[in-house]
Image (cartoon, rainbow, N blue to C red; front, side, top):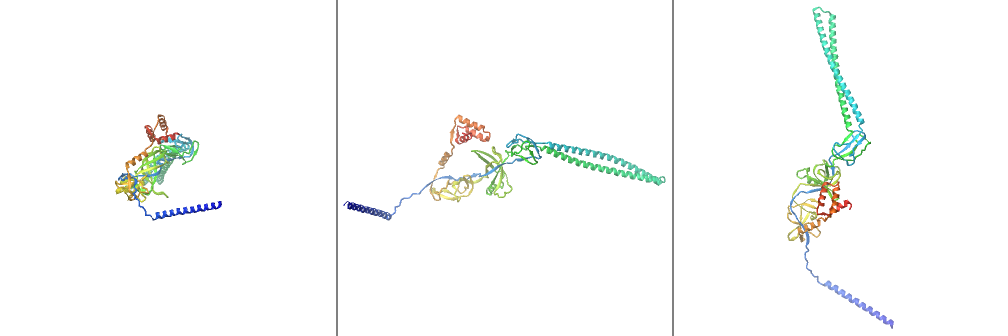
Amino acid sequence: MRFLRRTLSGLFLFALTLGLLAYAGNLLRSSIEARMNAEPRAFPTQERVASVRTVTVTPERIEPELTVFGELRSSRTVGLRASVGGIVQDVAEAMVEGGTVASGALLLQIDPADAESQLARARVDLDDALSEGREAERALDLGRDELAAAEAQAVLREQALARQRGLQERGIGTAPELEAAELSASSASQAVLARRQTIAQAETRIDQAATRRARAEIAVAEAERDLANTRITAPFDGQLTEVAVSPGSRVTANEQLAVLVDPTALEVAFRVSATQYARLLGKAHRIQGAPVTVRLDVDGLPLTGTGRVVREAAVVAQGQTGRLIYAELDDAPGLRPGDFVTVIVTERPIDDVARIPASALGADDTVLALGPDDRLESIVVDVLRPQGDDVLIAAAALGGRDIAAQRTPLLGAGIKVRPLADEAMSEETAAVSAPNMIALDPDHRARLVAFVEANERMPAETRDRLMEQLRQDKVPAEVVDRLESRMGG
């Protein structure tokens, strides 16, 4: 009986479960059919309005700036070489790496013994040549006197011959006497010729003595120059580098001993593309004289210099493109040859252009301008050139209109927008960009001032600017952190 009762109870519960599942399935099917057969409801839609920051396109006269990179060089650099060989006898204290020398200062002395001996021999040869010349002149004077005597004797012989011929014509003289007079006249003429030959030889001897004297004088000048070349001096004020000499070392002729650089005569060499070069040329077809500013950031303390373009490379080097331009710097404190700097070239001014953020320009050179009913419209602009985070565009067609300052995927032509006020954005930007100022106690300020005054490597302009900031009631926190990091805390 118990088994039968349990069996019937199980069957009853199973049948009840099946019935409930069937009822639930029927309810679910009815709900799905009702939802599918119901008509869709329409909800009212509202146009979405995006907030954008706008900028006003204002035509103006702008001087574009071309930013490139270049290397500083010294326009006055000379290699100090030994003109003569020998042993280095003495070296100046300034003859070290980075040593500062003045124009005409003695840098090193090569042993002058050999040069002095050569000069002494050359002077002895010169004295010998001078003596030879004086002796030749005395011989010439003596020969001239002998010639005069011979000519006088020849005249007498000719007179005696004429007298004998007269006697012979009158029948008084004899033939032997006439022959003797003729032989005497002939001998006198021969003596005159011999004396003239002696004079010619004396004149030739004088010419040879003059040539020998000239050669001796050249030898003396060379010996004096070699002796002077044993002393190497600085041709101009500057600093030494690549010093490779010490006392007692032997140097050979034309060996480079050091390089003298004038750190104040700086120029920067930088390369521009052909397009940038064409822009710099402009209508005048001249690039010389364009203003140039160089900048080197050193731990947040920029070193700057100014100058002007002076020349350009004559040819384009093999494997290179663009143009290599050189600019002479007038004032560049703290900069040294070899520095890799940022070069900013100021181009000729352009009229009727506007500076807009680069984020406002689309890939197809279009901007989104505010149209009627605050709806955006796409306008193609003439992009002239980039300027850092901005671009310059021709503003003739967009003068006075507002454009979206930043393109986003949500913005496009026909989109209704809500422009943000320029004043609010300016205040917000100013608040974000304003430096954090802190007040310093007297001890802290005194430590910072002492550190700046004791730093001799800091350029004078940078030191004056930092001292001016430290005298204020509040100092930028960035400046304080930078100085404390250099102080070691």
